[in-house]
Length: 132
Length: 132
DNA sequence: CTTGCCCTTGACGTCAACGTCACCTTTTAG
DNA sequence: CTAAAAGGTGACGTTGACGTCAAGGGCAAG
Image (tube, rainbow over all chains, first blue to last red; front, side, top):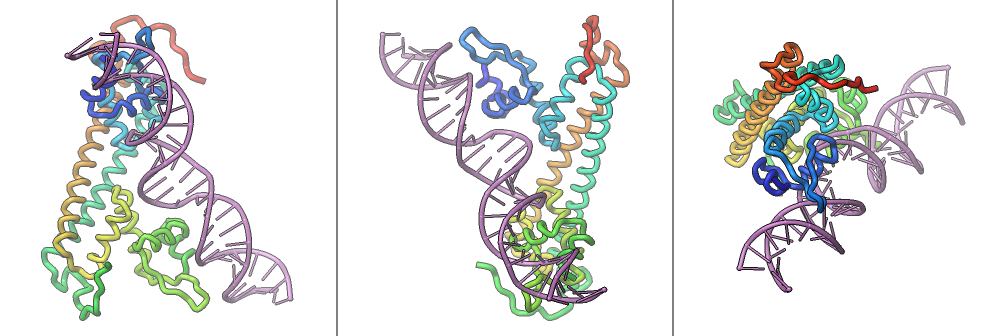
């Protein structure tokens, strides 16, 4: 497979794939002329990389974790890293849950604009300006 | 309260507070000499802003949502925005859960490095180097 | 008064994950 | 063979939420 195929199949740009390689996340063979050639497994790997990126892991960390996927081994440092990142993700999920709850409270207030829900409505509202 | 107090109590930098004001997220009175003065409620508001930031909402969006908190009202557009962002957060949580599961699989492999879990271990492992 | 800390505005720096452009070479279609 | 499509390597641009530095003003304590 060439880079365009991998890009299409994994849903990321060719630029991103070259960036991943630059960061040591993705390996490629080369043709005699210098064009990148990928194995089928590359698509799956790119998707894993994307998962980690969308979880907020920086490329440096991903670069430390991926060899562990390949070899199935894990040094104590990598193991600690795994635990750290797992904890970070758990915290992020809690933060997201909190923000979601805040939005839910706002949605509820928007649905039932009563004085009980909204202190601002207990006082007569002064003149409001819509911005622009 | 002055900006340093709010910064200390809310755990964000004074620079961040000025940035919030610049983005229309946070209001302040001014002394005759031009120094910012905040109400007690500012601390709570800053924490709410932080929650939204950590949930990945951009300042532009937060700026659209906060007036709704103040007035307790919500235009149809703001209501749609609330729903959109809630959905976005839900998606993010699912993405985080997927990444966490991926990490969990890696952690499990690290705990039980058996051929069943790890194809790489079916072959004799070549000499390993601990980095640094 | 002056020392020292806090505050002001303005402007530039940062960092990460790419987007985009320029310019050139390789591969493919007809 | 020729033109188009795809790929290669730099190198600079983008975006957002601030950090940081410069150059000065405000203010209570001693």
